Image 1 (cartoon, rainbow, N blue to C red):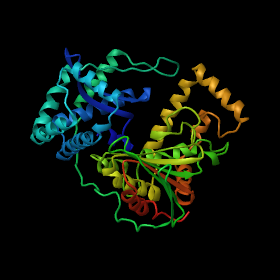
Image 2 (image 1 turned 120 degrees about the vertical axis):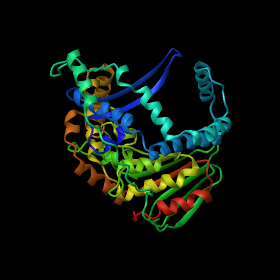
Image 3 (image 1 turned 60 degrees about the vertical axis):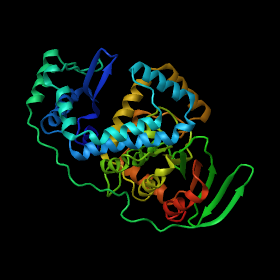
Image 4 (image 1 turned 30 degrees about the horizontal axis):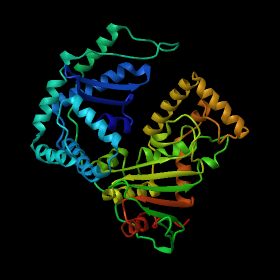
Length: 431
């Protein structure tokens, strides 16, 4: 619910969460918290409390409970398929965790058996009563943490308490659980065809051309069971930027990293993808280009392309490619995603200006590139000049015109994956 408010542009915070956890077997920690701008501290308290109070009064919905169960079960099912090739570090980490938690060490199949047995027995009423008992207003402490610097007024203790207590008195109404779309595409695209194919037997790589001009490579590898990676590289992006639009490709990647289309908002897509063991994201460009909306601090390592990656279980690969197709043909940058990217990037840049390693890297990049704007670190001016309209146009141009090269590596055979590539990539406009 917190995330949905952010996606819809209704939240004063950038992110928020609520949870219950064990504290070294001595206590149970119950918390709800949010992060945002210092000036909005009282609004954030009110909104965080409002959602807790709403669940206490009206409970969660059957749909929310079903989504949670679906996600848990899907993760447990995939763990069974990936367990044979888990790395030693992961196994040791889990052993340490289970010993510390004082619970039995279970195999993936034993965990799945446990989830399969217990999840159906958990009722909505039981969940709501548990939430209500944990999140009691009379057990709460209220904390506001913010930087102490010029231009920021740190609230007094009594002001924090007054705002918190007032938040509980605000009237809340039950959430309206409206019907939401269940399909990523309204209809499946007409597949393109492979027009040329060659195989390198020494490297076990098959390369092909699709009729629309897309280049495809495939290599089967089962080093990691039930794992596949599809890389869809759109040539261009950061390498095409100029001094006047440096960083625009990072903003354009928000259409993928915070996925939405003209038909589906980001909440719709998140709900549809719940329970699917596949992840779709993008990287490339500057101004912090990279996964999850470009939150890094320096020049990207792949400035010659905007790359969309589809990674996860081959079982859910078609769903991931459907989402990639939807975003390549109708991806949309939501205003709320842009606002959060801008605020977070500006704060990160301000913080990094105080770090000697960052200043050294900034000087080095400028020296080695001869002042090339495509290689420089972003500035606040670069971020502030960005706009949704410009980034949207940049993204659409790349999706419509850029040469595309696809690489498929993992536990999926050529005859299984090529029909999917033909359908969801081969159906794109001709390059």
